[in-house]
Image (tube, rainbow, N blue to C red; front, side, top):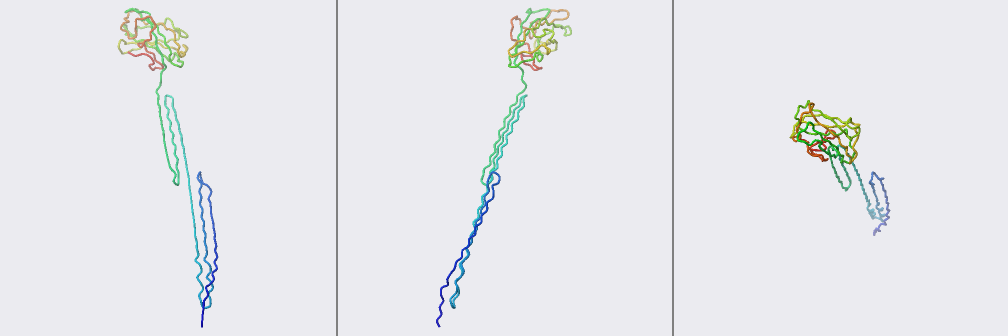
Length: 271
C-alpha cells in the first residue's frame, strides 16, 4: 500500500489595531503622550493530507510603541524698591527662572542703600564794628546774614551769637537794638545772654527773630542789624580780649560769630 501526504496550504490573516491619545497643554508648556499598539495574528495551519499531520500555524506578532514627553517651565520675577528722606533710599531686585525636564534655574539679587543725615542751609554772617577802641563803655557792632543756599530760609529759624569776655557781672549786662533792616525792625528781634566756656569767651549774646520778621530768599541778605552790649552802670569793657571782636568797620564775613539753623550750627566756629 502506498501512502502520500501533500503539503498543507496556508491561509494567513493579519489584524492591526492602532490607538493614540494626546493630552492638552498644561501651564505654559504642552504635555504630549502617545501610545501605538499593533498586533498580527499567525495564519491558520494547513489541512493535513491523508495520514499526514496538518502544518503549524504561523506565529503571532504583537508590537507596542509608547512615547511620552512632558515639559514645564515656571518663571517668577519679583521687584521691590523702598526709599526714606532724612535721608534713606533702598532698592532690591530679585529674579528667578525654574525649568522642569532639563530646564535651568537662575537667581540674582541686587541691593543698594544710601543714607543721609539732616542738612543746614548755606549761610554767611557778615560783621562790622561800630566801636573799634580797645576799651569802650559798650560793645557796639552790626551784623547781617546772607542766604547762599538755593531755598528760602525763615529768619525765625536762625539765631546769631556774638562771643565775648564779660568784664562785669552777667546780671548787669544789657543789650539794645538801634536799627534793623528786617521786616518790623527791632520790634521783631529777640535778644538774650548765655554763659560760655572757651578761648576769649565766657559769655555770648544771642540775636533771634520772630516769625513776622519774614524770610530770606535765595541769594538775599537780611540787611544790617545794629546792636549794643553794655552794663547797667556803663562800666568800661575791654574788646580786644573778646572772641568775636574785629577792629574793622567794613563789612567782613566773620567766622568768629556763629549762626544756627533750628539749633544746628550752620556758620562759624565756636570758641
